[in-house]
Image (cartoon, rainbow, N blue to C red; front, side, top):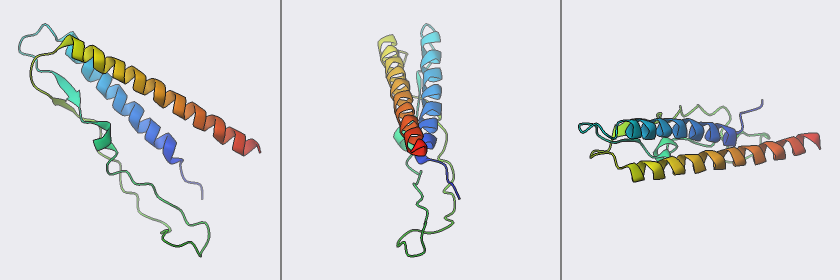
Length: 124
């Protein structure tokens, strides 16, 4: 039985998280001139994957420490926007936007490299 490649799942979760963070940043920038608006951000990605577990699959009956048919741990909680309090500081939001862009570029580069390696292995 073939199981999904964990790296692609992790990259997908990070891309989703980055999208939510970019939406929070865009909302903050759009509402920067509203005096009652409180800046928002998302929970850190590290908190999103804290509960993710890498499952090992036994390919031979003599493998030690690997459970066959392990239950899915369930998806970690989704990225949640939260109020961080205080007014919007445009410089901070632009820095966050740059972090999101760099995160997406890194995510894309890693997935692309892993995809190339997978294709090389499957071609032989």
